[in-house]
Image (cartoon, rainbow, N blue to C red; front, side):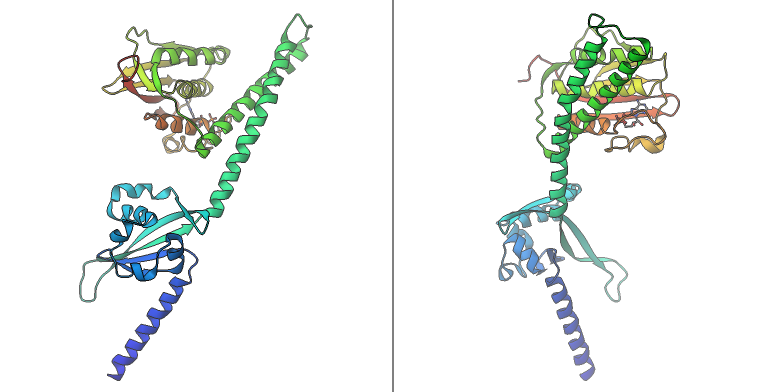
Length: 368
Ligand code: ADP
């Protein structure tokens, strides 16, 4: 009896120690058993969820989810594994008169009970990590990039205007050396404009202020516009842009401006990463509910190990210095997905690449 009592005392001490530890943690923690009843909830969790310990201990978590928003969003992941992929997006909680951001993690507790061999789930621990400081810094960074790139655009455009005037023979004659200088300033200012454009787009995507205005759009029209815009660059490298003669003109449900931006970006890449005197082919394909537009080049291609990374922000294939930002494809992906479309790539190193965008197909000029 003495032995059992002493063990019991030890166990109780241990339990108290763990309870105090959990209670004093600065991040919210909730524990539930295998029947989804709450077995512990620390003070921080009570504070952010505005709950009271007496009302939750021993109660099924789904009962509390009925009237508590925070618990509801946590419970969704617990019961529906499909939404679990969404757990990376931070939870936005308004408590204590301020807005906080949390990252949630649900840890399943599995043990092998004494005398058994099978692993058994005995509950879950829900952890919330407070990431408000990082989120605030991130928002400040996005605002900074947005203001800066916006402010840069006007002076760069006026520099381009002045260059245009300098090149005008009516104003004066440039000697060869001066012309070379003007050309290189021209190239640099184009590059600067592209970089600031990419940064501005990225900051708009980040801050959620990007507005998609999808409408019934003629595919041929946006393709032609994108080709016209990139023609000068293609001519510069003696690259021919070919399109299929297509009399059947499909319509897609797309934001004209953003989709054209994506096509220009893909065409610019195709030209930039191609050898001189080659061809870039733009083709369209009708699927049941979608229209796909493919841009194929016979350029340097992309090694298989980099294919899954090229849509990541700032990623550029190492060793290839062609003066980009590594943002174009990631913004293209965001633009395509925001309008229900997609973007994909197939590429073979040394042979060439095909970038394909898919958009929702509409049959009539306007979608009913
Ligand atoms: P960048 O401004 O560097 O072009 P992107 O996001 O548009 O940024 O592209 C990311 C990287 O993917 C590029 O740096 C390049 O290495 C690779 N890439 C993109 N398009 C092609 C292409 N058509 N052929 C070969 N490599 C490409």
